[in-house]
Image 1 (cartoon, rainbow, N blue to C red):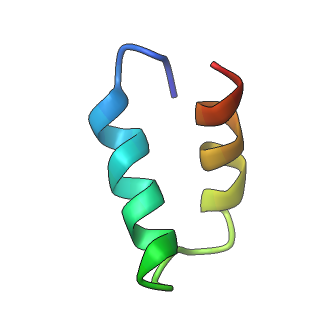
Image 2 (tube, rainbow, N blue to C red):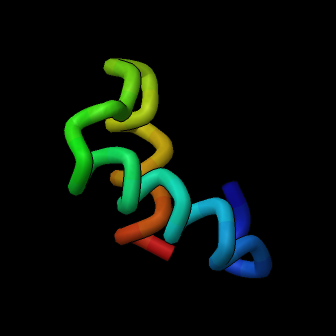
Length: 35
């Protein structure tokens, strides 16, 4: 995930908030926070 895709990061973060995120999403969310 690139910093040019904030919507993707928001959607992943939203999945975590509602507890519907898949385990492999953790790496994506972590990458979002680093960028």
